[in-house]
Figure 1: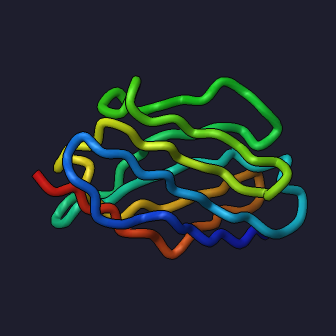
Figure 2: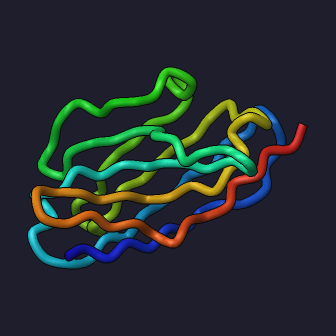
Length: 116
């Protein structure tokens, strides 16, 4: 099973950028689909973006298309989320997620706060 540790959250002004990173460790990383989810206060956790570790076109929820980019860093066993043009509506705890046929793992989350 894979272990996930997020980093890179923080406080940023509207229009700014942040880069989240998810460090993954474990066996058979290439078999996993990696994703970012987020959960805003009082709301359900929602999907943000995903990419296959072994390579595929990334997929984004409509609200972040053109602003967020998910990418893999194979050398560091990490999946990154570059977030640009942030708005207060992007404020949430961001979670890294890994899943394959047998296992599902979540990271502990990292807080992103966008001030207006």
